[in-house]
Length: 374
Image (cartoon, rainbow, N blue to C red):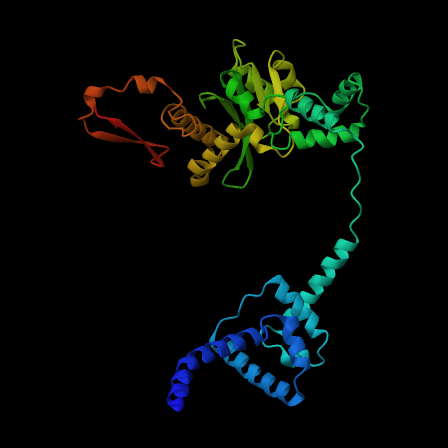
């Protein structure tokens, strides 16, 4: 009877004993995730066990490296690997996570960060009060034309004695996102505002059949792109250019402004006949300052002179007369969105849209003028 009671009691206590045993193992199990605890536990183990465990772990790392991508390491992990590698004699052979060059790079970066922090100077206190800084920035924003000297004098009136260089420093911070200030209107704005009163002149240099130089002088109006006058000569001089200006303005009704380059052929007779006109000389190596003339020169070359053999000065005069008539009255211009002569637009009859289109050859068929049949 007693045996049966003992067996029954043992069967009832066996699950409790197993549970307590498992809990005891969990409580007494060392924390392998902590580096300090794991190192202290390894100090109590034998050398044979450590060598076997290292071989076992190394084989697992080899398999892990072969089957999975490279793991991401935190800055803490990098620092610990660098520190532990300095204690291990053959760390290159034991390193499997990254390459030895990568570990050396981490060591150099840490060395650099250490000495950068070491060499940082102590932050100096501002010699200027925050109120003065706020006043400088406020004056710089509210008064766009004021300079550092003017703001410095205004601060002296308020009792703040600040160096001009310090004022300029905080002015630049306040105006950092501002566009650059123009001292006056730009060249493009001037041309746009006074295009109806501006004329321009220049030379086109070309060659005849025997490679002799011939020059074409022309005067063009900026607003309508209309060639007012042109002349052809082999030897342009100051007196010849002055006579061309007289022919272009017989009643002294010329433009208010005239753009020209710095050629010697414009002085001094040309300056004398253009006395009431404000002559604007273009800067050196600035073709955009006389862009309308440069564009006309390119059009003459591409559309006429590059396709014709010039026989003589008289032949070139005839070609230029026909091309200028085509340029002024027929040829459309993309820059102004219409043909230079506005009379042609008024002559368009809407009722003739059903009439066939005729092609009238210009410059011997080099170009054509398209019109409705009468």
